[in-house]
Length: 337
Image (tube, rainbow, N blue to C red; front, side, top):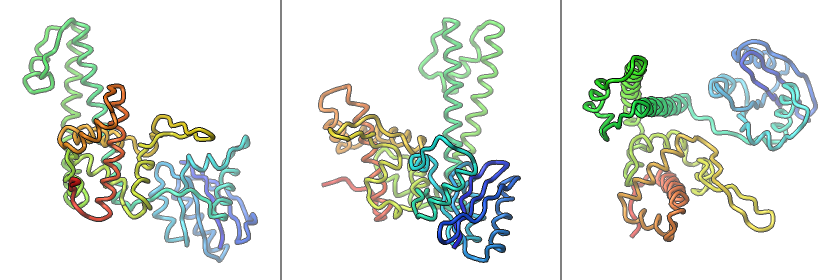
């Protein structure tokens, strides 16, 4: 068995090879796009005449590289970049050193791995993230339009974003530059809405093929967008050893410094922020629509209005755990008796 640690970049990759005893065999710099790395690994396999175990850090395009390296190696591990940095803290850092560290971690079987979904699952995640970026862009356009009205002393109606409100906005008397800005912002808003329709149509088609999305929507307050995001990122529910692990995965657990007395801080905010935001939004809806979720919320608030945000994050954490349990057992949501 040979252990390959690879420090992958867009135009260059450094490869370090260790033998079955953990001794250094070679270090090679592979220039070119990541596709050249695949060819280099094929050459290594021919030269070394032994089985390979490969490790590289997760970055943009890691799934594409994983799919092409998996048939060439007995084992391919994608390392978690943040946790690798926690293991190796050094003042000397270079591509060669990083590749060697990854090879050593692989030899010691101490690589902190990340889950690599199938290509279809990765494409699903990308579309979900793209929709979130469109929502952010649309919100920025709306806020700019509101700011433009305020600079001209105009108070908009509550139904500003309805069809009637947009017609009203287009007829407002502004200065010459203000009218130009308004017209272009309205064009951007229309474009964003059209793009969102196309994206959500594609997501709806994908969700109809996924039973987990329909299952999660049986929870009060959970809509298709939240259900699909959670299902896409959980991917395989069995990879979580316990339901409480999902809170750490989505960054909904507090930071802890308990060297001595226990001290809890803000939530870690690890994992996909888009899913975390959707879970918080779903928690607000669940609180409004279901008495049991409302009771949990009020118990955490305990009469202190300043604890409302803490309570809603705790509710989102509880919601994520319920979702994982449902995906594991395949049962629809049912309120506790």
